[in-house]
Length: 504
Image 1 (cartoon, rainbow, N blue to C red):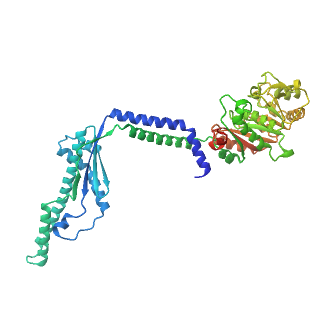
Image 2 (cartoon, rainbow, N blue to C red):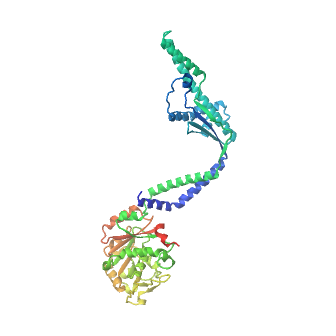
């Protein structure tokens, strides 16, 4: 098993843990309820020893014929499980211990070491279990004796016919008569080649047994749960791991971000920074390392479909880059469904990208300065802080909201886009202009903007997008001028090996 396969199995078990625990509890509860409703069960046991020496040889003094012990035991077990045996027992007991089918269903036969055949009968009555198992073992011995006797009688009849055909007084006839005498002696004392070595004197209670029933029910529930998990995983085509992304897109995963707290989006501030700051810091470092002066100037952040966390990723990545000393502008080009203003608590009526593209606003009118310290970001209009960007030693972050919501791709298709991006970068003194774009697989904007950007970051939410959708996106990106620089896996389950260092 490869490391990737082991990781996939562990991830599947983690995702299905509630289902597994539920079925284990249900299995244990159901098994206990079943045994309680069924009532008490009592088991009685008897045992028969198969003799290894032939009575024929002992009586006649001849050399015994070799018989395979395993074959003898298999034959004995098959005979003990035969419906004929239980029909004989039912007739012998006049149905007092049950019908033939009831006796057979209540009795189990097993082969043990040293040629021992064990009978176990389980019923709801102690006395009935004891009497039934003794009747079965006794009838088993009688039946074996009858079978052996019938075989000897057939041999006697055949030998008498041979004696009658031989002339009187010949040596051959005398030999046949001697063998006939031996067989007649054997026919008078038929042997089952088996001995009863254990007769049931009591029956022990086997059910209900709470501990055993709980364990058995839990095991059945676990097996059922694992079966369901296996079937579900076989039918599941969602992206679940970094390996899935790298295999389908042929691009590295720059960072993996575990599931964020409910309704939390900007986690680079306040109490969430300790848990999630490193993930976005790693993403920022991987994005710009080794690029020097050639680092991407315009970066688009997109996803295949909606609700994969691209806006959250773009916002937190922008903060991380700014704290590394870069001057960053984050512009919301997802004018169909804008979210950046909400993340940074910018007034929803503020002008933004749509006004800038239409020429109804200048760069200075749409830029908002964002503080990089404190428990929450503080925003102020660029005009209030002054036109001259002061990058300082910690970098800066300026945000451009989407402005008026537009249900079309006209903004990205506008010939003014290159000039607007250049104006934003120049006005804010930006090293990096980051664009939050609409989902690439369902809208036209990313295909249009790919001609204007230097790099693309793809956000993939674990368990959200299918492998089929990601393959379609991979085919679509072949026509983009800018290629996918890397991917970010979001909503990933926490891995112990990634977090042990920080535990107290």
